[in-house]
Length: 156
Image 1 (cartoon, rainbow, N blue to C red):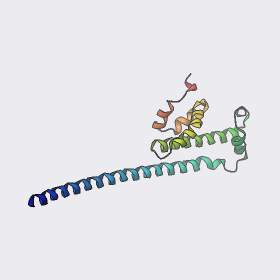
Image 2 (image 1 turned 90 degrees about the vertical axis):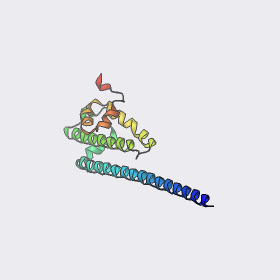
Image 3 (image 1 turned 45 degrees about the vertical axis):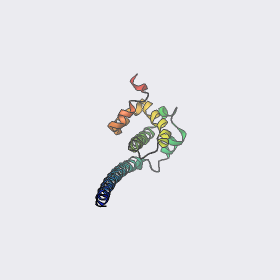
Image 4 (image 1 turned 30 degrees about the vertical axis):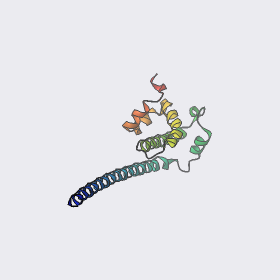
C-alpha cells in the first residue's frame, strides 16, 4: 500500500509539473499574440495619422474628384499644375496605404484574400515609373524587398 501511495504521489507531481509547463506555454503564446496586436495597432495609427496629413489638402477639391472618377490614362498630359499636384498627393497616400496593407499582411493581421484583392493595385502602382520616387520615399525595407519580386518595366 505504501508503494502505491508513493507512486501516486510521483504521478501527481509529474502531472502538476506538466500542467505548470502547459500554462507557461499558453501564457507565452498569449503574450506574443497581444504584442503582435499592439504593434499592428501602432502601425495602423501611424498610417491613419499619415493618411490624414496626406489627404487633408485634397478635401473639397473638385479637380481631385474629377481625377479620381474619370481616370488618368490619357488625361495626365493635359493636367493643370494644380491637378498634377493633387494627383501626386493622392499617389503619396496610395503608396503609404499599400505599405500599411503589406505590413499588416506580413504580421498576419490581414487575411490572404484581402491582400490578393489589393495586389493588382500594388503591381500597377509599381509598374508606373513616374511613381518610383514616391514609392522609394514611403516604402519600408520589407516592402521594398517585396516589390523586387514584381514585374519592373522601369529597369529596362
